[in-house]
Structure formats: C-alpha cells, structure tokens
Image 1: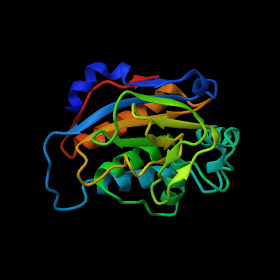
Image 2: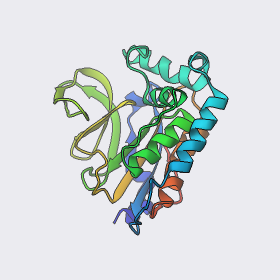
Image 3: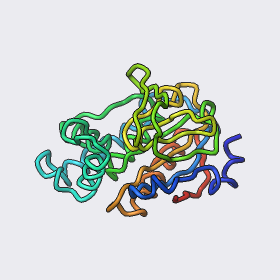
Length: 232
C-alpha cells in the first residue's frame, strides 16, 4: 500500500550532490485512490474555469516572460543546454494555453497536476507507483542510459543530463521537463508519487504549495495522501 510509504517519505527520495550543485531541489508526497467516484461530468470544470480567470487577470502573453518564476525555469533550461524559446518549461506552456482560452483535459489525475502547475508555474511530475520502485534518486546521467519518453521513441542519453531514476535505474524523468512512458499515469493508476521540481531562484514554499494543490484536487475525486510534503 502506498499509504505505508508515508512513514518512509523522507527516505524514499535522494538528490545527489552533483544535482544539488545545479540548484535542483524537490518537494513530494504520495497519494492513493481510496474510493473511485463516478462523475456525471468532468470533475474539475469549475477549477479550470477559475484557473483561466486567474491567469487572464495575472498575465498576458507578452508579460509572461517577465514573471520571476518563469525566468528562473528559463534560466535553468539555458544552464542545462536547452533553449527555452524552442522547448518551453511545461508550466509556462500550460499557462500560455490558458491565456489563449484552452486547457488540456487528459485524465482527472493528470489534470490535477497540470492545474497546480499552471497556478504556481512549478513543473509537476506524477509517477505510477505500480511501475516505479522506490527509493528514487535525482542524479546526473553518465551517458548511455535508456529513456522512453511519452510520445517519442527510445533514446540513449548523453552525459551530464539531470535525471530522476528509481531503484532499478529506470529513467522516469529528464529534469524538469520530460516524463517516461514507463511510469506515466494510466487509467488504472491507483498510487502516485507527486513531485514538484525546484530550481534556483524559486521559493521552496511555492514548490511545496504546488504539490499540496495537486493532493487537494485529488481528494475531490476520492484520493487520500500523506498529509505531509517532504522537501529535499
């Protein structure tokens, strides 16, 4: 049971020193389905409407790039060799969609992460614990690791890439923007590790808040969580 991992929360994820040198930090918790609830309509309709209103009152497409949190993730992308004007941080991409009046509806569990990410600008990772084996580690690739991204073919990674791996060295995530198809959320997912991706110049409390929003949204659809958010 995922709930049994709550007492081990502080020990199930480690950030290696080489990743810490890049300014990487994370907040995380675990959530699990208690009672599957049938829905007559999309359960987060009001949440998405409120989110879109919030975004339109706070940002414009032109002003977005000047937001301090957006700048922090863009700066981190440049630091790890990614051009953020071509590959946008996932949270920024979500907000840009919201400012254009649309928001993705993939599945309620995935959508909970996207809503929290758009509110806070913090990238959120969600991993199916039926396919991911703790303890987890954020480290730097040595080169040659296999990565199977959502929506793409298998890749062999180069050296020096920040990655999130499980105890079997399965690459679950390229930090902080690409998830693996192997540990992605499915319709059958019942236990989830929720991770907020922190980078330099982003407040730790904001990253923790992003994870808390995900957990609270999942409660609306019959999930529970550890009621504690770990910071590493």
